[in-house]
Length: 121
Image (cartoon, rainbow, N blue to C red; front, side, top):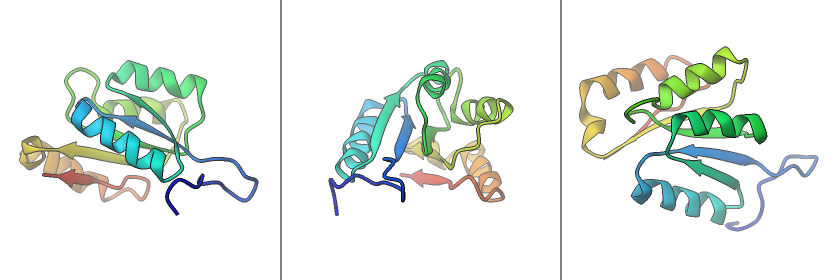
């Protein structure tokens, strides 16, 4: 059913925020989600990810967990402190995904039903 908008019973289209630093990962994620009918906003910047949630309503987030500066876990924590609880997918791509801090974070994320860890190598 690619391309057909994902909508709830009231016809509201589902929106996803993708916070990913690498364009070679961010752009295909954007394309794939858009082709499946989701409304998608993307950013490579943690503060911008938080700012986007002030101006748009999202149904889910895909967050890069290993960015320098404000990473995906910090963005998620900042949003939680503001009372925003969205289904969130912490994501790490590449060699960094094998590093102990990422594996430990992925294991921690599995303990929370609202976090679905993804590690792609």
